[in-house]
Length: 372
Image 1 (cartoon, rainbow, N blue to C red):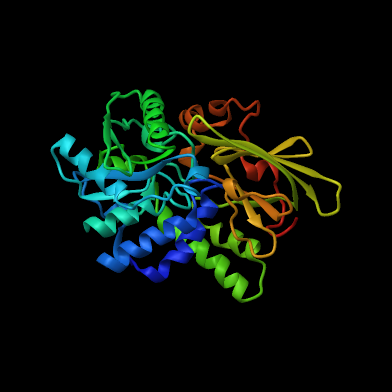
Image 2 (image 1 turned 135 degrees about the vertical axis):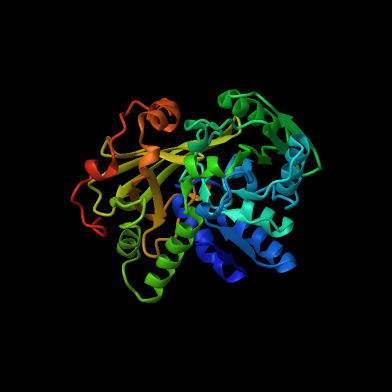
């Protein structure tokens, strides 16, 4: 069912999107502010259930691209994603009937809401990653046959670049990354233009609704002084993300982070509160793997989510700091993200990781939701 998004929904939506974004997808607070101002100026946004899309409607997803670390120092103007959409419409010679996220993430669940508020378009309640990934070819859209180009990259000074690599989505990512670096490390994009029928066939459905539910669940658990991680596990149980496992609780002791080639890459180390176990996280914008005492407990595409230990507030990769008290959970991805075709595009081998994919609910089977 479609629904109307108002300013009051934004804190829950931003928090939930940051959880599903596995540490990436951009700063949720920046995204919250951008959407809040757009809604105050133009009114609420219609969030359209994918089942209600006409099959021939043109849907153009919109997003931010670049290293999340850059956004802390280089805030967007807020006009760039609409400019990207309009430039792609002009190139295609056709107006979009809706926009949509390409991923779940702190800012990238929010950018299409900015576009929707400023253009009057609805935003489709779905996305192409079911989490956040660092590269543009890592989309369920691409896995199931939708080309990403033609696409547009837009900068803060009014620049727009059209990239068309046909069905070669990996080359599209390479070229767009180069343009983004030259625009200062962050840009805004419109890509994967598709029909409503293709959305229904290839997208992960209702992830905006799920993000709102996740954020609200954490907020209400805190207000009721109950275990927010246990509440989150219960909220996810009957969704496409049905399994949550607590992987680790402890204190961050080291963070190595660098911004290179348009990505935030690095690792973080934590020690359990009793000092007996060690966690290592590896990330490229998003968390890719959680190792506990050298053993892989959760591997991409399953979600590795770092939460503040007491309040379960999501912590993004660019916000990880020495001394933070954290709880790390693994969340299972939807089935369409675990097929052999999907794992070839965004499984461990796509990142050069020496680990085979095993579902987190099998690796950490039988663990109680709130058990550290």
